[in-house]
Length: 136
Image (cartoon, rainbow, N blue to C red; front, top):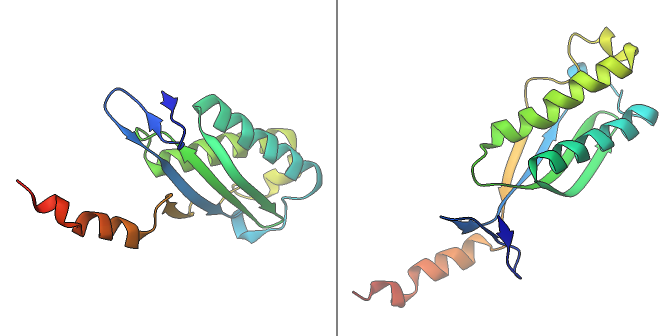
């Protein structure tokens, strides 16, 4: 996998960019993502991204929710991206911070996602509707 000057990923059979905005919350929306927990969570998220060869383009860890903007590979479904981040962070944080075990689980099962790209919908529509596509 390589990237070109525009930032698209190239593989043997595809060229593109997969970016997703993710948001998830702790169980019962508890404000537990503070201090050392917040610092450790940030490092764990970076580690997951590094191991998977994904890029965290933006990250915000609030006391009661997490925002990530992640560039990932086209082979991985969004639910697997979420599972990688939430799964490892839940396991490690609960092992390292016993007070988090008071919650039935660290994260809720839910999450928000929004795919994003470098080109607006109007630009894509204009390109598709351009007369050069009508040529045979």
